[in-house]
Image (cartoon, rainbow, N blue to C red; front, top):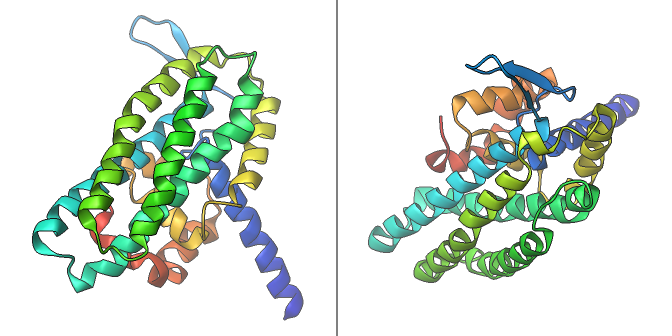
Amino acid sequence: MTVILKKMKKFLSGSLAFSLANLVIIPGLIPINQKHIVMANNIEETKSPVTEGMLRIHKLLSRSLDVSISKCDEYVKTGIPSSEREGFLMYLTTFIRVMHAHHAGEDDVVFPRFTGVINAPYTRLKEDHIAISAILDNLEKDVATLDDLPETRKKLADIQVLWNPHIKAEETSFAASNLTRLSEKEQLALLDEVGKHSQKSSGPGSITIPFVLYNLNEEDRQEFLKDFPWVLRKVLIPILWRPKWKAMDPFLLN
């Protein structure tokens, strides 16, 4: 029995690293060898898994930021229903962890790898990360009690002011057309490194992965799920982990 448990622990650890690599860089996990699509004018255009994933993580973080602000506006007027307090705290805490993990993966792994290869405003992007990180750290103190919703809302709005132009700059710099020089082998190595790095700061997978999944629309969610191990898709997320994350239901997409 001990041997079986050790094997299961090792499998789940590997599955989480796999998932987190997708979370930070390619949450939709497009197969690493680059796909090609034929545009309307019959010109073939390369699609980069890094670009696709960046767009997806930006979408889910943008949505969770919007939802958090909207819920603060609602609760300032009505108070937080007792049935939603635990879920809102979990939702905000997970948002903070996911954004921290995303930016840490970029700062520590992605940007150093692309410097000198991709022309991007790295100094500005890192400065944005520092500024957002400082607000997130202060926000985490507010979230611990949720006693001052107007102040929590203000911090979220401050993040949004920085976030929107920040992701626009990233999406322009790391467009698929700029990433064609990165080989399949290099992408695989990068993803492996990011996955290991992300486990340090993204929080428990039993909450983080559902948060990511259900802040995505159906199409993006299916892209994210399609290459996950069967046990994650069919057993862990919807059944075994469900009691741990179901409190976030009011804030997630169906």
